View 1: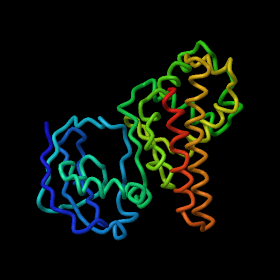
View 2 (view 1 turned 180 degrees about the horizontal axis):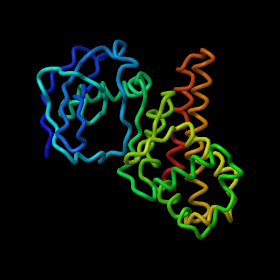
View 3 (view 1 turned 180 degrees about the vertical axis):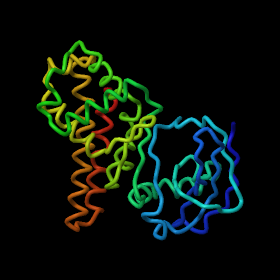
Length: 262
């Protein structure tokens, strides 16, 4: 069902629009929300931001904009809903604020897709690897179904997005969401680095992709994890975040070259 938005013009280029979702105990019920506009500086730490691949998430249930605020449990920012896509001036201004919007979120929810049983197994494997690399990789067979599920997970369109850099790297609390699974991005980063460091050319081929192709994919993901950890260090040490932002922007072309090979 198409969504009808009633947009009020943002008061300034320093304002953003967030959704306030009404509580509901029924996941199949109509999703009801209202818009709230305020200065980004006033909203920092109060909303969650969604990161996803263009074209998703698909709206499987009707949603309605309500006129009055009821008991709100979730403040949410998603670009396709919170930005007036028909207002080119607003859209341009909000795009320029993307880094600050994701940095100011209470946490970032990275939507990978609806998922399924195979993704459940892949995340369980990544959790084991992140906790104990030696035991986690022990018995990892090149012909197992687990190898196939890992390939399927790493092949998700989300991980080839260029903008994943600014959406994930600039926030310290990032959760990967695949169906009903929530997986900490930090744990994902650890597992990816273990895989990259421990799977040589022969080991890479067991996932089901040509060794070079998977090596490039893992290298790209490892870059993201390293940037994220570097950002964490910079924030904790009180270094100007602009330093990291400039570094990341300088790596965009290099990262784009990697993703183009996937």
